[in-house]
Each structure stands twice: as structure tokens, then as C-alpha cells.
Length: 84
Image (cartoon, rainbow, N blue to C red; front, side, top):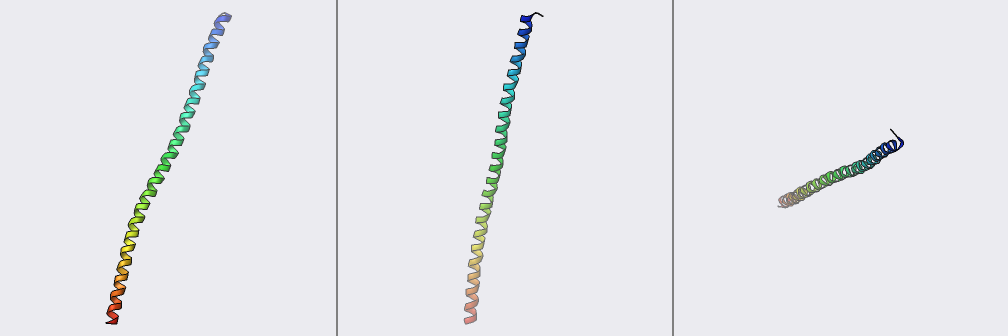
């Protein structure tokens, strides 16, 4: 090969190197985005869990209120029976 051919081959190799470098950078950016999305998925998962716990909390509060009403009724009935 003569000088010009060698330089031409070297330029082709340099183009391949630059292309691969840009692809690696692009893939690293995608990886970062995927990691961020994975964290967001975790955040969403935790948020869903929180929402489920809030629903359960409301259900338990309703049960507690019903129990409180029953306790009050029972106490009043007992008190009434004791007085009578």
C-alpha cells in the first residue's frame, strides 16, 4: 500500500472509532434513562403500596368507628339496665 492508501484506511478506521464512541455514549445515555425509569418504577410501586395502605387505613377507621359506636351503645344499655 502506498501512503495515500494507508491514510485512507486510517481515516476509515478513525470513522469506525468515532462511530463506536458515539454509539457507546448513546448506549450509556439509554442505560442511564433505563436506570432512572427503573427507579421511577420503584417510586410508582411504592406509591401504589401507599395508596393500598391508605385504602386499608380508611377501612380500618370505619371498622373502628363502628366498634366505638357499638361500645357506646353497649355501655349505655348496661348503664340503663343497672339504673333500672
